[in-house]
Image (spheres, rainbow, N blue to C red):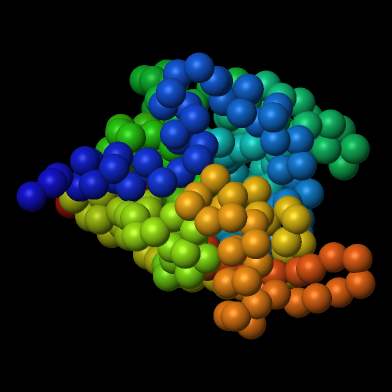
Length: 265
């Protein structure tokens, strides 16, 4: 029987991002520079949506917050409205440059950007912030190491945002049966480490242009026409003049540890 750490590493294989990095010929920055419409796609999908509002409500005003895998600022920017300081950590200078432009446009002066990953959090970070946030940035096969570093840095609490099931039927149609990483691995890991985790779920319903969505699935075993036919048959394709839209649903899980000192062992 596989250990949780092995299960997590195997499940990550379904991630295109992780697979590209694992090959070793592309860096984080290379990946995101080749994905210039990332922000547009996130906006179309309603991300981050209500889960960001919930995280902000749980972090008291005046806190110091570390945003791990901050990207272009989906959580950093709303957190900066009430935090004394937000430290944005991300391995892509390209994404951080976008975040900095957004921060300047919003006149935020309490955001610090640093290039790096969670694995770069060493002893000097111990208790350096009040809270740590990681949203869809756990692209690390060493999930226990990732969590240990988060817990080391955060004096009070941590918040993990990751996908919750069920898996989109279109993914299974395009790629066949496969194990994918979801929030349950994070909860199980925290429990093994002796922490009590609270879990909340948030749903996003949105319409995504088929032309934007198909790129995610065309690398699977289905053709564009097969994908379109499947969506029509399942009632998810909405025909509009000039473009077809796809009905989509995403479920974000918020996994919270509200007292990082309270490990049971």
